[in-house]
Image (tube, rainbow, N blue to C red; front, top):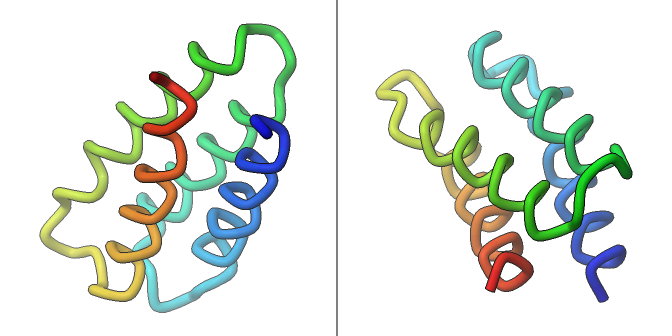
Length: 84
């Protein structure tokens, strides 16, 4: 289940990274988050918590397009279910 959720999140983050209408700092945070989810160094709940904190911070960026913010909220929702 966790692996499937991480895969769904990775696909969404990949979509954000490839969207040139999204500011570079947001795309960079999406890439960092995707890399963290892919690493098997820590437990899934720890990786999810780390990514949640990164994405929560960028979701409040005033320069983020609405469609990208919605995608980030979708990832956050998915990761919240793993964290708890």
